[in-house]
Amino acid sequence: MSQRGMTAAALTELGAITNQPCHLVEVTTETSGTPSVVYMTDYSRNLDWDGNTYLAVGNLLGVGNISESAEFQIQKLDLALSGVDQSLVSLFINNNYLDQPVSVYMAFINNGAVVISPSLLFKGNMDSITMSEDPDSGQSTLRASASSLFVDFQRKSGRHTTDSDQQHYFPGDLFFRPAVNQVASKQWGK
Image (cartoon, rainbow, N blue to C red; front, side):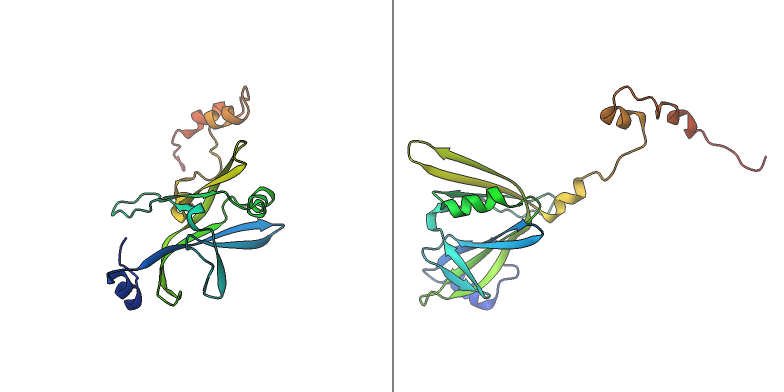
């Protein structure tokens, strides 16, 4: 974990002989244009920070590795929730989660269970959620995937006025076939 952006209090706690690190996860869903944020932590009990209560899902929450690189690359994040409450499952089933914000913070908890200056580890948008159920144990598992905000730079916008693009959407349509011949340079004024 990079120490960039960490406060002095967080660096002190990081250097302590024993410390209690945890993740603070914020996942947004949307219903009829109204956003709703779910706050979760992998700590053993609920935590209050920044005016929000992060629900303790303990070992049920798995946060994938978040790596930094000097090269430009799209960061991906995997979250796993196992044995989750059905109200949380229905939240994702019944609401829009695609392209909604996801933030993951690394925090340290002091002896008084106070959250010490969390540092933002990941900020991106939700890509997908898959759910699986084990009929024997009755356990539900949610796996979510998110990409950093830079994923939009790789998307192509719109369509091209080429015959090959037209054939992709409307096979057999010949409208853009003569467009290739129109590219020749023309001289004006002669």
